[in-house]
Image 1 (cartoon, rainbow, N blue to C red):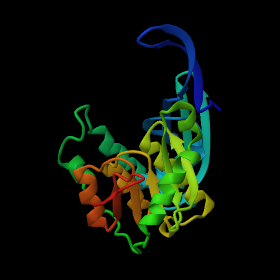
Image 2: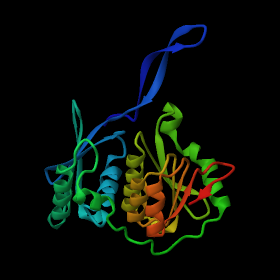
Image 3: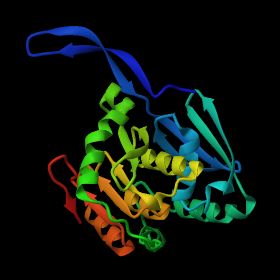
Length: 257
């Protein structure tokens, strides 16, 4: 399988000199997602932890309700990218086909038409059990996060999604060039290992868009912490679902929205 990073020759330019050097870049490539042989989406992602991604993406998209409904995952490399062939139970195909029908009506301008706007505002399951996390635990997780980011250390260009216990201990981390894909990988890893997202909080090294709130809520995690800011829609969706949302989380301060 393709590596997560690649070294390329570059010219290092300073105010006084130009010299040859090498730079490690995170790998980004198209990942075509298929369900039972039917194309669903093409995602730009880092081609590692693809089984975790397949499970997490399927859960986040509500194609399946549990990890056990994913029966098989095969990653097929091609010159253009990777085809991720996911086999799901046949009775889960109708939700997938309905999502495909909605996608067909989308255009390059974004989400167009009443049906798609309703899809954006689709109800989220309410958070059943809010979690009580002390600020000191969040600060502890922030302090420890970088040591759990080997791809970011090597390239300076990858996002991390971490699952943390209520005491701030980082229990699982996944990285990707895309923040959405990193979160899907984390959700898949938790589901596959049998770890309940209700028992801790998710920490993301990115800004918080509404899709990240939705993925977190659908996974059942009661708290989301992001290092950068949140969008207005992300804050609205989090409040409506009962998700505790912490943004602009830095080592000296954070905001609870």
